[in-house]
Amino acid sequence: MKKFHFICPSCNRRYFINIYSGDFADLYEMRCTKCSRTLLINQASDDFSKVFGRFGKNYTKEFDTELSQNLTECPCGGRFSAYASYRCPHCNFSIHIDEIKKQIKWWGSDDGIPGVIMGERMISRNIWNKK
Image (cartoon, rainbow, N blue to C red):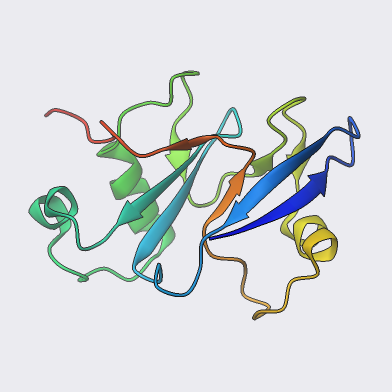
């Protein structure tokens, strides 16, 4: 994990973002549709394997919908999706990935940044629906 200073382009508040990369390649990053919380889901976890099998899914919009339906709601009432915007944890402003790359001087591929956590807003427990 690497920690970077970030300044919201809307409210100008300064906070940290955390970037998880490298050994975390088997994680799905899911963001809340209403707030700045992020889920990192390990494909190798027993809970994931019970529903989807081990490493058996390509990430598509259809899979995103299926995965989202198996997750609990965010405490704010939103749903988690890999296609949701990054958001400022202070003003909830939607932040484009290019702004994040510019501010942290992203060194990786143009595909995106794996595991971006805005502020300290990560959820990692009790994420699965109890169906």
